Image (cartoon, rainbow, N blue to C red):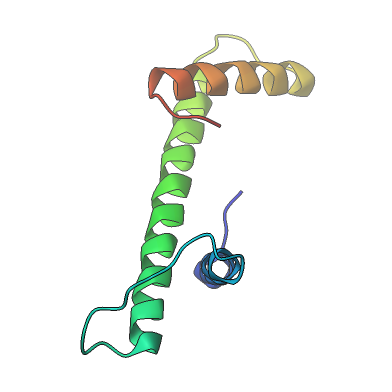
Length: 99
């Protein structure tokens, strides 16, 4: 699933704010940095992490599609779905990535 940058930002913002609201993390803002700027930098780090994770999953999907396209016969849609799931799990395991 591809998410827009705006959607990713809103998710990151919500994660950040929920962690703070539930008192699961406490941040010490650097001296001289405004709280809003420090919050923005933390949210940006979360956005970068989510974006990198989505990129890994996209790469896995692309590799799986190459594998499926390499089959010598045309696959039925249900068969293709089953094989896609199987290959995706296999490729993810090989890359030490948890789906």
